[in-house]
Amino acid sequence: MTFRLLRGLIRQAPPPLEDPLTVRELEIARLVARGHTNADIAVQLTISPGTVRTHIQQGESR
Image (cartoon, rainbow, N blue to C red; front, side, top):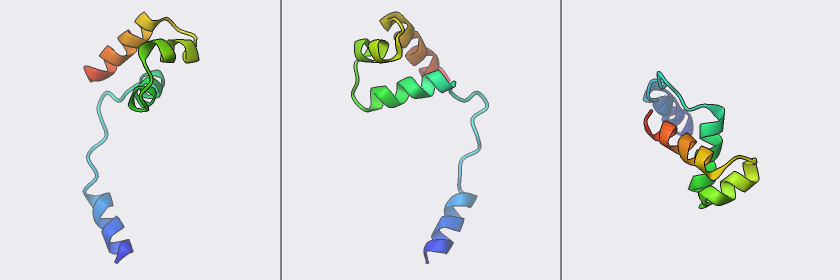
């Protein structure tokens, strides 16, 4: 049962994105999903809050 279910999911997987998120955009998206603020993320990644906002905007536009 589980094997058939997994095979079905593999066949139904969406095609890869033509323009996937960058490593940094993905890292920031994960931190946002965990509830971190832009200021928290900026401190953690040693970048400015403006740069965090830019990465979020670029990721959302993809």
